[in-house]
Image (cartoon, rainbow, N blue to C red; front, side, top):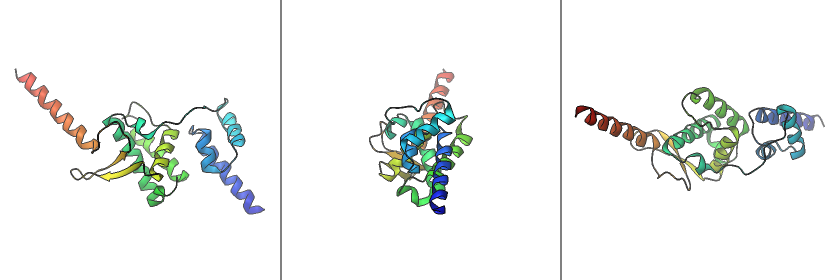
Length: 178
């Protein structure tokens, strides 16, 4: 009886930590094992309004461009490093929260479009299904996310962006030299 009470309290605490970061109800239910009704009640108590409904984003829609692929790659790598190999077997809610918080602390000034916790959960879930893999670039040795059905061609987004910057800089130098 005492063990069950402690497990329930841990699940409720986890739900609170997820919901204050605006994770949607479905993923919160999935990660905590609590009922949808209970999670919806927590959401309303925390935010003062009902939970958002609708479809979840698709991983490939979060990386529609090379900068988007870089954003996804950074989050996925943080999550992988924090959660270790376990993240390829199941979504680790503690690693998800830590990676999400770390991502926002370190990149909030860099990316215009933010990554919310539901987006992060979708990425973590798709790592389990192997729709997202982590590749190491043979040129720069950085790790990046390769997303199934991505709108960007396969390859290292860091190298592509670096090359684009060089080409743009070279073109600007040529125009100024005229």
